[in-house]
Image (cartoon, rainbow, N blue to C red):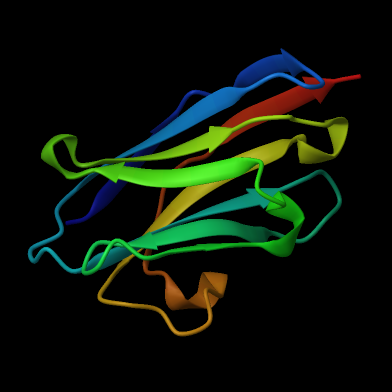
Length: 124
């Protein structure tokens, strides 16, 4: 059974940084995709970034604008989301999601497994 556990959320001032972690277990093959999503109060869940284990390729939402970096430390079965230059608009619950193999569009519906989420609050 695949499990995903997020950590690293918290309260930070605008302009600050946070690094989120997604510890994963249970993928049978070294071929998976893990994505980060976020959901702000009253808003729909949106994709932030994803990384594919197969070739290390990464994809980012346009609003990231170079501020976030997704990476994988395979020896620790952990995917990170480094977030810099945070703004109050980045305030949301952040979730990591995983699926075996690749995804085509990065839609939340392409992922089979979800973590419980970690809250990020950015104060002005």
